[in-house]
Length: 387
Image 1 (tube, one colour):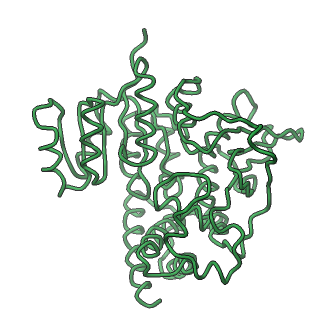
Image 2 (cartoon, rainbow, N blue to C red):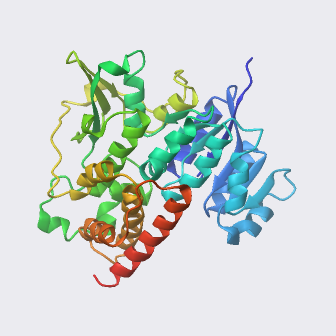
Image 3 (spheres, rainbow, N blue to C red):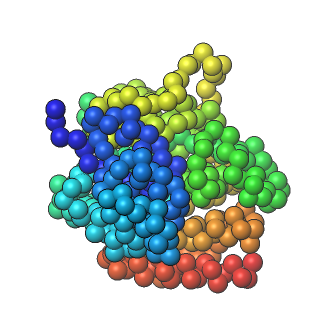
Protein backbone atom coordinates (compact mmCIF):
# COMPACT_ATOMS: atom_id res chain seq x y z
CA UNK A 1 0.00 0.00 0.00
CA UNK A 2 1.26 3.47 -0.84
CA UNK A 3 2.26 5.85 1.93
CA UNK A 4 -0.59 7.60 3.68
CA UNK A 5 -1.13 11.27 2.96
CA UNK A 6 0.01 13.23 6.03
CA UNK A 7 -2.25 16.23 6.57
CA UNK A 8 -2.10 19.43 8.59
CA UNK A 9 -5.55 20.95 9.08
CA UNK A 10 -5.27 24.70 9.52
CA UNK A 11 -8.59 25.68 11.11
CA UNK A 12 -9.63 22.22 12.29
CA UNK A 13 -12.49 23.38 14.52
CA UNK A 14 -14.32 25.41 11.87
CA UNK A 15 -16.93 24.20 9.40
CA UNK A 16 -14.46 23.13 6.69
CA UNK A 17 -12.01 21.74 9.25
CA UNK A 18 -14.56 19.49 10.95
CA UNK A 19 -15.77 18.17 7.60
CA UNK A 20 -12.16 17.59 6.54
CA UNK A 21 -11.68 15.38 9.58
CA UNK A 22 -14.83 13.47 8.59
CA UNK A 23 -13.21 12.71 5.22
CA UNK A 24 -9.92 11.72 6.86
CA UNK A 25 -11.74 9.33 9.21
CA UNK A 26 -13.69 7.74 6.36
CA UNK A 27 -10.48 7.29 4.36
CA UNK A 28 -8.10 6.39 7.19
CA UNK A 29 -6.38 3.82 4.97
CA UNK A 30 -5.27 6.64 2.67
CA UNK A 31 -4.66 9.63 4.94
CA UNK A 32 -4.23 10.81 8.49
CA UNK A 33 -4.32 14.07 10.40
CA UNK A 34 -0.78 14.79 11.53
CA UNK A 35 -1.25 18.37 12.76
CA UNK A 36 -4.41 20.07 14.00
CA UNK A 37 -4.52 23.87 14.33
CA UNK A 38 -7.38 25.89 15.80
CA UNK A 39 -7.93 29.56 16.52
CA UNK A 40 -9.25 29.55 20.08
CA UNK A 41 -11.74 26.68 20.43
CA UNK A 42 -9.60 24.55 22.72
CA UNK A 43 -12.45 22.36 23.88
CA UNK A 44 -13.21 21.08 20.39
CA UNK A 45 -9.52 20.93 19.49
CA UNK A 46 -8.89 18.64 22.47
CA UNK A 47 -11.78 16.39 21.39
CA UNK A 48 -10.43 16.23 17.86
CA UNK A 49 -6.89 15.49 19.03
CA UNK A 50 -8.04 12.68 21.30
CA UNK A 51 -10.04 11.17 18.42
CA UNK A 52 -7.48 11.58 15.62
CA UNK A 53 -4.22 11.31 17.58
CA UNK A 54 -2.12 13.84 15.64
CA UNK A 55 1.54 14.39 16.42
CA UNK A 56 0.87 18.06 17.20
CA UNK A 57 -2.05 20.25 18.23
CA UNK A 58 -1.76 24.05 18.10
CA UNK A 59 -4.03 26.82 19.31
CA UNK A 60 -3.38 30.21 17.70
CA UNK A 61 -4.63 32.12 20.74
CA UNK A 62 -1.71 31.95 23.15
CA UNK A 63 -4.04 32.66 26.08
CA UNK A 64 -5.58 29.20 25.54
CA UNK A 65 -2.28 27.31 25.62
CA UNK A 66 -2.57 26.16 29.22
CA UNK A 67 -6.06 24.78 28.61
CA UNK A 68 -4.76 22.86 25.60
CA UNK A 69 -1.80 21.57 27.56
CA UNK A 70 -4.04 20.36 30.37
CA UNK A 71 -6.55 18.81 27.99
CA UNK A 72 -3.89 16.71 26.24
CA UNK A 73 -1.66 15.95 29.23
CA UNK A 74 -0.17 12.44 29.24
CA UNK A 75 -1.43 11.69 25.71
CA UNK A 76 1.94 11.95 23.95
CA UNK A 77 0.50 14.63 21.65
CA UNK A 78 2.76 17.66 21.37
CA UNK A 79 1.07 20.99 22.02
CA UNK A 80 1.99 24.55 21.05
CA UNK A 81 0.45 27.98 20.54
CA UNK A 82 0.89 31.19 18.60
CA UNK A 83 1.92 32.43 15.19
CA UNK A 84 5.46 31.07 15.22
CA UNK A 85 4.29 27.57 16.11
CA UNK A 86 1.83 27.61 13.19
CA UNK A 87 4.52 28.70 10.75
CA UNK A 88 6.91 26.02 11.98
CA UNK A 89 4.16 23.42 11.62
CA UNK A 90 3.80 24.29 7.94
CA UNK A 91 7.45 23.37 7.46
CA UNK A 92 7.42 20.00 9.24
CA UNK A 93 8.97 17.10 7.38
CA UNK A 94 6.21 14.73 8.45
CA UNK A 95 3.38 16.49 6.57
CA UNK A 96 2.88 16.65 2.82
CA UNK A 97 -0.50 18.38 2.56
CA UNK A 98 -1.98 21.44 4.26
CA UNK A 99 -5.72 22.05 4.30
CA UNK A 100 -6.16 25.80 4.74
CA UNK A 101 -9.60 25.87 6.35
CA UNK A 102 -9.29 29.18 8.20
CA UNK A 103 -11.38 32.21 7.32
CA UNK A 104 -9.82 35.56 6.51
CA UNK A 105 -6.41 37.15 6.16
CA UNK A 106 -4.93 34.91 8.87
CA UNK A 107 -4.61 32.10 6.33
CA UNK A 108 -2.14 33.96 4.11
CA UNK A 109 1.13 33.74 6.02
CA UNK A 110 0.93 30.02 6.93
CA UNK A 111 -0.01 29.17 3.35
CA UNK A 112 2.99 31.05 1.98
CA UNK A 113 5.30 29.16 4.33
CA UNK A 114 3.72 25.87 3.25
CA UNK A 115 4.38 26.76 -0.39
CA UNK A 116 8.03 27.54 0.36
CA UNK A 117 8.28 24.19 2.16
CA UNK A 118 6.87 22.37 -0.86
CA UNK A 119 3.61 21.19 0.66
CA UNK A 120 0.49 20.60 -1.39
CA UNK A 121 -2.27 23.06 -0.51
CA UNK A 122 -5.94 22.06 -0.34
CA UNK A 123 -7.17 25.65 -0.46
CA UNK A 124 -10.40 26.60 1.28
CA UNK A 125 -9.18 30.02 2.40
CA UNK A 126 -10.37 32.48 -0.27
CA UNK A 127 -8.41 35.37 1.16
CA UNK A 128 -4.98 33.88 0.40
CA UNK A 129 -5.44 34.43 -3.34
CA UNK A 130 -7.73 37.44 -2.97
CA UNK A 131 -5.14 39.39 -1.00
CA UNK A 132 -1.92 38.16 -2.60
CA UNK A 133 -2.72 36.12 -5.69
CA UNK A 134 0.19 37.49 -7.71
CA UNK A 135 2.68 36.80 -4.94
CA UNK A 136 1.37 33.27 -4.39
CA UNK A 137 1.61 32.49 -8.11
CA UNK A 138 5.20 33.74 -8.26
CA UNK A 139 6.13 31.61 -5.27
CA UNK A 140 4.45 28.53 -6.74
CA UNK A 141 6.68 28.79 -9.79
CA UNK A 142 9.66 28.25 -7.50
CA UNK A 143 8.11 25.40 -5.52
CA UNK A 144 6.91 21.83 -6.02
CA UNK A 145 3.67 22.76 -4.23
CA UNK A 146 0.34 22.30 -5.91
CA UNK A 147 -2.81 24.23 -5.04
CA UNK A 148 -6.03 22.23 -5.26
CA UNK A 149 -9.27 24.15 -4.69
CA UNK A 150 -11.67 23.15 -1.93
CA UNK A 151 -14.34 25.86 -2.29
CA UNK A 152 -17.36 24.20 -3.88
CA UNK A 153 -17.43 26.69 -6.77
CA UNK A 154 -13.76 26.35 -7.64
CA UNK A 155 -13.82 22.60 -7.12
CA UNK A 156 -16.67 22.46 -9.63
CA UNK A 157 -14.64 24.41 -12.19
CA UNK A 158 -11.61 22.23 -11.44
CA UNK A 159 -13.67 19.11 -12.09
CA UNK A 160 -15.19 20.51 -15.29
CA UNK A 161 -11.72 21.27 -16.67
CA UNK A 162 -10.42 17.71 -16.29
CA UNK A 163 -9.36 16.44 -19.71
CA UNK A 164 -10.03 19.77 -21.43
CA UNK A 165 -7.63 21.97 -23.39
CA UNK A 166 -7.37 25.26 -21.43
CA UNK A 167 -7.21 27.19 -24.70
CA UNK A 168 -10.78 26.09 -25.50
CA UNK A 169 -12.26 27.67 -22.37
CA UNK A 170 -14.30 30.77 -23.18
CA UNK A 171 -15.90 31.51 -19.80
CA UNK A 172 -16.01 30.45 -16.15
CA UNK A 173 -19.48 30.80 -14.62
CA UNK A 174 -19.53 30.89 -10.81
CA UNK A 175 -22.92 30.28 -9.25
CA UNK A 176 -24.27 32.18 -6.25
CA UNK A 177 -27.25 31.27 -4.09
CA UNK A 178 -28.16 34.93 -3.72
CA UNK A 179 -28.17 34.53 0.04
CA UNK A 180 -31.11 35.14 2.39
CA UNK A 181 -31.90 38.61 0.99
CA UNK A 182 -32.05 37.80 -2.72
CA UNK A 183 -35.59 39.18 -3.09
CA UNK A 184 -35.28 42.11 -0.65
CA UNK A 185 -35.61 45.67 -1.91
CA UNK A 186 -33.25 48.43 -0.77
CA UNK A 187 -35.42 49.55 2.14
CA UNK A 188 -35.63 46.02 3.57
CA UNK A 189 -31.89 45.52 3.14
CA UNK A 190 -31.24 48.61 5.24
CA UNK A 191 -33.21 47.06 8.12
CA UNK A 192 -31.83 43.52 8.22
CA UNK A 193 -30.18 42.29 11.41
CA UNK A 194 -27.19 40.02 12.02
CA UNK A 195 -29.59 37.23 12.97
CA UNK A 196 -31.36 37.65 9.61
CA UNK A 197 -28.04 37.49 7.73
CA UNK A 198 -26.94 34.31 9.49
CA UNK A 199 -29.98 32.35 8.28
CA UNK A 200 -28.58 31.13 4.97
CA UNK A 201 -31.22 29.27 2.94
CA UNK A 202 -28.94 26.46 1.72
CA UNK A 203 -25.49 26.30 3.32
CA UNK A 204 -24.31 25.73 6.89
CA UNK A 205 -21.23 27.95 7.21
CA UNK A 206 -19.40 30.09 9.71
CA UNK A 207 -20.71 33.55 10.59
CA UNK A 208 -18.24 35.59 8.53
CA UNK A 209 -18.71 33.57 5.33
CA UNK A 210 -22.48 33.59 5.79
CA UNK A 211 -22.53 37.39 5.94
CA UNK A 212 -20.22 37.51 2.89
CA UNK A 213 -22.78 35.35 1.09
CA UNK A 214 -25.56 37.74 2.07
CA UNK A 215 -23.66 40.76 0.68
CA UNK A 216 -22.36 38.73 -2.29
CA UNK A 217 -18.84 39.69 -1.27
CA UNK A 218 -18.00 36.01 -1.30
CA UNK A 219 -18.75 35.93 -5.05
CA UNK A 220 -16.47 38.92 -5.59
CA UNK A 221 -13.75 37.03 -3.73
CA UNK A 222 -14.40 33.86 -5.73
CA UNK A 223 -14.08 35.74 -9.03
CA UNK A 224 -10.74 37.18 -7.90
CA UNK A 225 -9.61 33.77 -6.67
CA UNK A 226 -10.64 32.03 -9.91
CA UNK A 227 -8.44 34.39 -11.88
CA UNK A 228 -5.36 33.09 -10.09
CA UNK A 229 -6.41 29.46 -9.70
CA UNK A 230 -7.17 28.92 -13.36
CA UNK A 231 -4.93 31.53 -15.05
CA UNK A 232 -8.01 33.13 -16.53
CA UNK A 233 -8.36 36.75 -17.62
CA UNK A 234 -10.90 38.53 -15.38
CA UNK A 235 -13.28 39.39 -18.22
CA UNK A 236 -13.85 35.66 -18.78
CA UNK A 237 -15.17 35.10 -15.25
CA UNK A 238 -18.70 35.95 -14.18
CA UNK A 239 -21.27 35.15 -11.52
CA UNK A 240 -24.85 34.00 -11.94
CA UNK A 241 -27.48 33.62 -9.22
CA UNK A 242 -28.74 30.06 -8.81
CA UNK A 243 -31.02 29.94 -5.75
CA UNK A 244 -31.13 26.13 -5.42
CA UNK A 245 -27.31 25.81 -4.99
CA UNK A 246 -27.28 22.52 -6.90
CA UNK A 247 -25.11 23.60 -9.84
CA UNK A 248 -21.90 24.64 -8.13
CA UNK A 249 -20.28 26.26 -11.17
CA UNK A 250 -19.96 25.88 -14.92
CA UNK A 251 -17.39 26.17 -17.68
CA UNK A 252 -18.28 27.32 -21.17
CA UNK A 253 -16.08 26.27 -24.12
CA UNK A 254 -15.36 27.85 -27.46
CA UNK A 255 -17.72 25.46 -29.26
CA UNK A 256 -20.63 26.66 -27.09
CA UNK A 257 -20.73 23.61 -24.83
CA UNK A 258 -21.20 24.21 -21.10
CA UNK A 259 -20.11 21.68 -18.48
CA UNK A 260 -21.49 21.86 -14.96
CA UNK A 261 -20.86 20.04 -11.69
CA UNK A 262 -23.96 19.30 -9.64
CA UNK A 263 -24.35 18.21 -6.05
CA UNK A 264 -26.18 18.95 -2.83
CA UNK A 265 -25.03 21.98 -0.79
CA UNK A 266 -22.47 20.08 1.26
CA UNK A 267 -18.68 20.48 1.47
CA UNK A 268 -17.74 16.83 1.97
CA UNK A 269 -17.55 16.18 -1.78
CA UNK A 270 -15.18 19.04 -2.75
CA UNK A 271 -13.01 18.33 0.29
CA UNK A 272 -12.70 14.64 -0.58
CA UNK A 273 -12.00 15.47 -4.24
CA UNK A 274 -9.16 17.78 -3.22
CA UNK A 275 -7.64 15.34 -0.73
CA UNK A 276 -8.04 12.48 -3.18
CA UNK A 277 -6.20 14.52 -5.85
CA UNK A 278 -9.06 14.12 -8.32
CA UNK A 279 -9.63 10.50 -7.26
CA UNK A 280 -13.25 9.87 -6.25
CA UNK A 281 -13.29 8.87 -2.58
CA UNK A 282 -16.10 7.73 -0.31
CA UNK A 283 -17.24 10.17 2.33
CA UNK A 284 -19.87 12.39 0.74
CA UNK A 285 -22.67 12.13 3.28
CA UNK A 286 -25.51 13.36 1.09
CA UNK A 287 -26.47 12.34 -2.43
CA UNK A 288 -28.24 14.42 -5.04
CA UNK A 289 -31.61 13.27 -6.31
CA UNK A 290 -32.75 15.38 -9.24
CA UNK A 291 -36.28 14.14 -8.64
CA UNK A 292 -36.30 16.32 -5.52
CA UNK A 293 -35.90 19.48 -7.62
CA UNK A 294 -38.75 20.47 -9.90
CA UNK A 295 -36.62 23.14 -11.55
CA UNK A 296 -33.18 24.72 -11.49
CA UNK A 297 -33.23 28.44 -12.13
CA UNK A 298 -30.62 31.08 -12.96
CA UNK A 299 -30.72 34.86 -12.95
CA UNK A 300 -28.35 37.78 -13.32
CA UNK A 301 -27.10 39.28 -10.05
CA UNK A 302 -28.42 42.71 -9.08
CA UNK A 303 -25.34 44.84 -8.41
CA UNK A 304 -27.41 47.85 -7.40
CA UNK A 305 -28.80 46.03 -4.38
CA UNK A 306 -25.62 43.99 -3.86
CA UNK A 307 -22.80 46.34 -4.90
CA UNK A 308 -20.08 44.33 -3.15
CA UNK A 309 -20.03 42.09 -6.21
CA UNK A 310 -18.68 45.01 -8.27
CA UNK A 311 -15.56 45.07 -6.11
CA UNK A 312 -14.28 42.00 -7.97
CA UNK A 313 -13.84 44.02 -11.16
CA UNK A 314 -12.26 46.90 -9.23
CA UNK A 315 -9.80 44.56 -7.53
CA UNK A 316 -8.86 42.80 -10.76
CA UNK A 317 -8.53 46.06 -12.71
CA UNK A 318 -6.52 47.94 -10.07
CA UNK A 319 -4.41 45.07 -8.72
CA UNK A 320 -1.56 45.81 -6.34
CA UNK A 321 -2.73 46.17 -2.75
CA UNK A 322 -6.31 47.12 -3.66
CA UNK A 323 -7.67 43.57 -3.07
CA UNK A 324 -5.83 43.52 0.27
CA UNK A 325 -7.58 46.74 1.33
CA UNK A 326 -10.96 45.41 0.21
CA UNK A 327 -10.48 42.22 2.20
CA UNK A 328 -9.25 44.00 5.34
CA UNK A 329 -12.06 46.55 5.30
CA UNK A 330 -14.60 43.80 4.68
CA UNK A 331 -13.38 41.79 7.65
CA UNK A 332 -13.67 44.83 9.90
CA UNK A 333 -17.08 45.73 8.45
CA UNK A 334 -18.53 42.24 8.84
CA UNK A 335 -17.34 42.05 12.43
CA UNK A 336 -18.90 45.46 13.13
CA UNK A 337 -22.17 44.39 11.52
CA UNK A 338 -22.26 41.15 13.52
CA UNK A 339 -21.87 43.24 16.68
CA UNK A 340 -24.62 45.65 15.54
CA UNK A 341 -22.22 48.60 15.24
CA UNK A 342 -23.08 49.29 11.59
CA UNK A 343 -25.96 48.39 9.31
CA UNK A 344 -25.95 45.78 6.56
CA UNK A 345 -25.73 48.30 3.74
CA UNK A 346 -22.90 50.10 5.55
CA UNK A 347 -20.59 47.18 4.79
CA UNK A 348 -20.09 48.23 1.16
CA UNK A 349 -19.92 51.91 2.12
CA UNK A 350 -17.18 51.23 4.67
CA UNK A 351 -15.09 49.29 2.14
CA UNK A 352 -15.30 52.06 -0.46
CA UNK A 353 -14.52 54.75 2.11
CA UNK A 354 -11.49 52.76 3.29
CA UNK A 355 -10.23 52.35 -0.28
CA UNK A 356 -10.27 56.11 -0.71
CA UNK A 357 -8.02 56.58 2.32
CA UNK A 358 -5.39 53.85 1.92
CA UNK A 359 -2.59 54.39 -0.57
CA UNK A 360 -2.19 51.74 -3.26
CA UNK A 361 1.11 49.91 -3.78
CA UNK A 362 1.45 48.56 -7.32
CA UNK A 363 4.04 45.80 -6.87
CA UNK A 364 3.73 44.76 -3.24
CA UNK A 365 6.05 42.52 -1.27
CA UNK A 366 4.78 40.40 1.60
CA UNK A 367 5.76 43.16 4.01
CA UNK A 368 3.71 45.60 1.94
CA UNK A 369 0.67 43.34 2.29
CA UNK A 370 1.16 43.17 6.06
CA UNK A 371 1.47 46.95 6.35
CA UNK A 372 -1.49 47.56 4.03
CA UNK A 373 -3.67 45.11 5.92
CA UNK A 374 -2.83 46.82 9.22
CA UNK A 375 -3.40 50.28 7.76
CA UNK A 376 -6.73 49.36 6.15
CA UNK A 377 -8.02 47.81 9.36
CA UNK A 378 -7.07 50.89 11.36
CA UNK A 379 -8.73 53.21 8.85
CA UNK A 380 -11.91 51.09 8.71
CA UNK A 381 -12.10 50.92 12.50
CA UNK A 382 -11.80 54.71 12.72
CA UNK A 383 -14.44 55.24 10.05
CA UNK A 384 -16.92 53.08 11.92
CA UNK A 385 -16.93 55.57 14.78
CA UNK A 386 -18.19 58.21 12.33
CA UNK A 387 -21.13 56.19 10.97
